[in-house]
Image 1 (cartoon, rainbow, N blue to C red):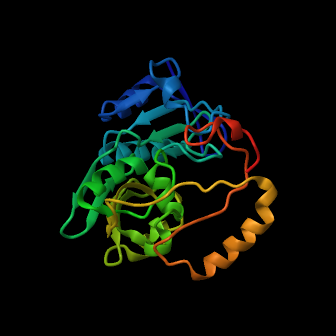
Image 2 (image 1 turned 45 degrees about the vertical axis):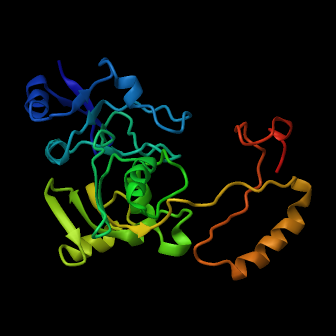
Image 3 (image 1 turned 180 degrees about the vertical axis):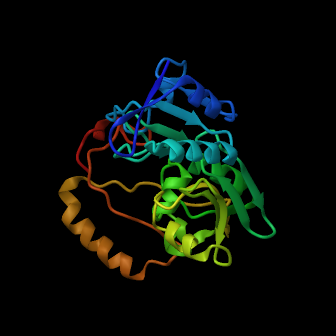
Length: 278
């Protein structure tokens, strides 16, 4: 039985059983086809409006699976997409008819509190990092949603509550391991493959598949203060003016931003204001 996979030219390519098995025999993670148990869950991402069906989903167990998959796709000129946390609103983690390289099982985190460095694999979500680093009173400046994947956030910039004090997530990348389009495994930093290191910081996934990051850690917590301050929408004009003045003198360790929306049904909002414009 042939496997039909989308090529880079927009045409489906027939990969025969022998060719496909030669590839999959070298994969330690799960290789999921549309008829495979777990496929439907694997193609589900944060934006539930996205309905995209890859021909193959490869749940990589490590960098070796990434290398093997990219070399296979390169050999037959097949379309690939990358999935970390799957939080991208546009659904770019998936590709119709192609191969989705799913890194969500790569969740290794190691913290060196003395050197203030965290080594984080690309399938990790922000809440996972906070859990490990806060044990030592340290943090990586990341985003505001604990279910966001670190890879997409970091490579695209990464702004959050700690950014005023410590910069964007991308500013705190010390080095990275990645697999390039040739299927070569590389380490990039200011000292090694420095031009590629420059390119990935803000270049999203366009210059390679990052399998692990090395981040700077900063002392934060363990006690922090935060939460929403809610006003009715009718006061927006005066509140935004006060916010503008406050921002001029706000210390770097403080972060605040205004949001105008209908109140979501969260437990910390009174039932009486739920769905009211705020």
